[in-house]
Image 1 (cartoon, rainbow, N blue to C red):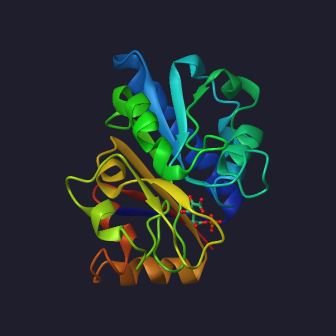
Image 2 (image 1 turned 120 degrees about the vertical axis):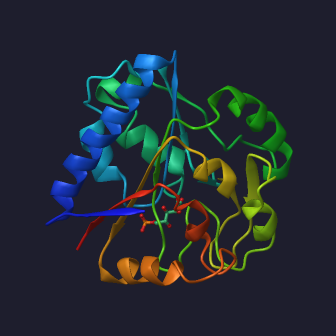
Amino acid sequence: MNIIEYADRDMLAIDVANQLAGDLKTHLLHHDSASFAVAGGTTPAPIFDDLCAADIDWKRVRLMATDERWVPSDSERSNARMIRERLLVNRAAAAQFVPFHIPARAPEDVLAEIESQLQPDLPLSVILLGMGEDMHTASLFPGVAGLAQALAPDAPVLAVMRPDSQPEPRVSLTARVLDAAIAKHLVIYGNAKREALERAKSLPPEEAPIQAVLSEMTVHWAP
Ligand SMILES: O=C(O)C(O)[C@@H](O)[C@H](O)[C@H](O)COP(=O)(O)O
């Protein structure tokens, strides 16, 4: 794990957007397509505001969330909505988006269908993760039912998580899929998350799920 510190969040956003664009371009030099999984939540949107203008052959990029909240895609809480509004605009509007939420279905009923669509995208080319102060990443929350399976080396591609701390079920890429990505970035802001990340290093992944995906990770931090 390598940590890059920035003076402020604006500088971080510009630099991380450049690095992500560089990783995607490099991948596309050698492959027909690139798969790109991005966190939801609040952290990535300012990065997307820069990244969406990058001069990349976006039509060859397959974009997905690292995890989705089981809410309609027009909900304020939908990660797909945030990604559509902030990343799938400008040049990046040409990218293909793979949704994890399918209306009128239960999360367990769609996993096999979405997993089959994701097979050509693995290993993921590039990921952008966030982290909570409780050391969750994607929707792999400490103590949630099913976490051990989602952290296992033979986990399926996707898992349904129902964290007590969250208002809705989640569909998440599992740890082994996130950890195997070719280029890996984690963005965190503030001292509390920085301290949580330090703490995570000495905890088992069941207590600090972020730990399960930190190999060869570039961490970007700003106050
Ligand atoms: O859908 C989500 O909530 C996530 O993908 C989640 O893992 C997020 O990255 C962290 O909770 C950090 O969230 P913030 O960026 O809002 O602090």
